[in-house]
Length: 261
Image (cartoon, rainbow, N blue to C red):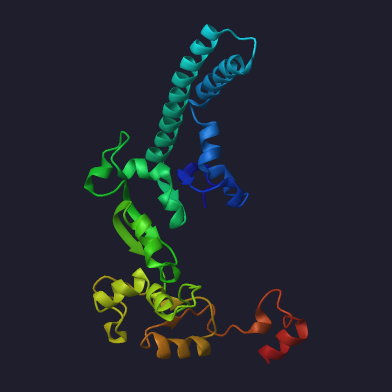
């Protein structure tokens, strides 16, 4: 939650604004750049750039005026680019968290950091970010995971390879089979952590043992079938039924009374 001003994280969200939810827009690069120090100077330079563009497009402008305008425009465009890059670089270097999709982390903004540009020295050890976390990694293509993985020094894959795999749309069986093997699964297999007998703490993995989603009768089946009996149910959901869920068509007073009786 970023709404508490006293403990607000400095967050930047990469991605096209049209694809972001309204509540996320204030944290987008575009919104933060507009509010950042130095942006006003960029606006002034762009205004000056526009005036020279009008000279070039004016058929009444003299040849000497157009040559000067062209030279000035070239210089101003370079200045705008440098100033905008500086603003974005300052936003990213001061951010505590940078959010993006796996493919979105291929953004050219981040490429400049991993190539060693900018003023921050963290890149020299293998990546700009201290830590990269990929959520739902067991549902992401391995090729997509490599994009953010190469942006940082350390990597955490969060997910569950016992649940839904990636969606592969291919008519070629071998292609679909190859792409369905995720980085998450590969790492688990490589270090032997996919063996149910490993328990909750493997060589490189840690299992979250307590689930808060389902009735214990359902969870016990999943625990035995998929997790070697290590999955436990929290007391708050152990005896929960459909009739007790708010908004459920079964959640009438009669049904709740019947379920308790």
